[in-house]
Image (cartoon, rainbow, N blue to C red; front, side, top):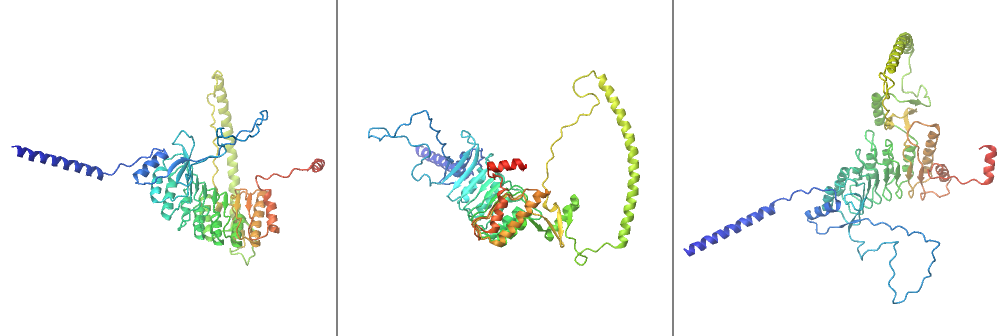
Amino acid sequence: MGKKLERVMKGDRGGTTSATSQETDVDNNKTPEPYNCVGDFEADYLELCKRAGLTEIPQVTQRPHRPEPPPPPDPKEKVEEPTTPTPGDPEEAPPTTYTTSNKFDYFRPKVQVELEKPEDRKSMTEIYIRGWKVDQRYMDVFRLCLPAADKLHTIDLWNVGLTDNTLAQFSAVASQCLNLRTVKLDGNPVPGEGFHQLIGEDSMIVSMSLRSCKISDKGAELIGKALSTVKTRNQSLCVLNLNSNLITDVGACHLSNGLRMNRTLLILSVANNAIGDEGAKQLGEVLSRFALTHEEIVERRKLISEKGTPDIRISPIPKRSESRDRPVSQSSRSQLDKSTAKSGRSSSKAKKKDDKGKGKDDKKKESVAKTTKGKGRQSGGKKGPAAGTITTEPETPEVQEIINPLLEEAESINGELFIPGNRVLINLNISRNKIGEAGLKALLKGIQYQITLTMLGSRSSGTGLMRLSLQKNGFPPDHDLYMKIQELMVTRDPLYKPPAKSPDEDSISQTTGV
């Protein structure tokens, strides 16, 4: 009996161990539940990195700021003369004008954040990553935790080794951040140059910086098409920085094509590139006026049929041999005269009927006014609107619609249709390029055209260029055209202050009344 009991006990022990091993296997095979981000970036980021199996997790720290300057010394206090320290004196406290860190701590990978309220960890507004590679694993983490930050409006990724895949994924993340307005991707050369994905038609980004990204003419073409085409245009981007890239005349032409129908971009910088005279000519043409292409004319006709005919000025009048349209014949003129005569008779009859109807309506209005006055007297002079009076609702301000550039006032010259150029762009930086005298002539012509439109009070939107940077190009600084451009632009600068007048000039101006 004893041996049988031992065998039974051994069998039970083996069964229990096998059952527990099966349970542990089932637990290990179970997929963990998805993590729901709570809006605390640091907590979400650390938890998602652990779940992704990342061994090296960059630390999340607040972005350092320069300390505030010390208050000025009180003149009443006595200034102590510096004394030589003795070995027994305590060490002097470090200055408060700068901050120090541990050895090599400055070069360690970090994720620097800016909080709106230091005590609130869910109030992250800006994020800065500098100098370490953000690969696919980290981008998967950011894809989940960045959209949960409701107040995030700035992302700065400097020299993080973006690729085509990570850039495409980052553009998808940026579209999910509802309050994101500023994106800086400086120092990230991408082979596919797909930066245009960030500034599509539905993008909400206001400012984008792409300095030192090795953007060539291919990338400039994609960015130009993202700014505007005949049928689509970006309506949010106001600042675009393309400094220190590889853009030539071809790329400048693509960017100028993007400015044809774009009426949102305010500041464009293409400094330190390889733009020459051809690119400057295209930019000058876009700033002054340009002829519409066949595709643009077709789209213009579609818009006219939907919204009505805009004003078209024809100048100069072409000769009969040069005109493409058939002249009006004598028979058609007679038919037009008959139709105008009929319309005049019908209009006179309609006016008589309207006068009779107006007299009846005025009598009705007078009777209604008398009855309302009587009711008002019977009401006993109560406060508030009297019975029978009509209460007017407060007027709501009308929202101005953005006018399509194709519907602006056009001018026909030698069989081509011209419209005013881009006058919304107020700051253009094309310094440190290869622009010569021919480019200066085109830019000067564009500036003069904008000034004349401003003086005439043209209906086209915008004030024109206020700042134009042209220094360090292929012409001497004392060039006549360059000096003339500087004279025209100095008064258009919003920060320009005229020189103070001398007492003699003031007295002369007072006597002459100028």
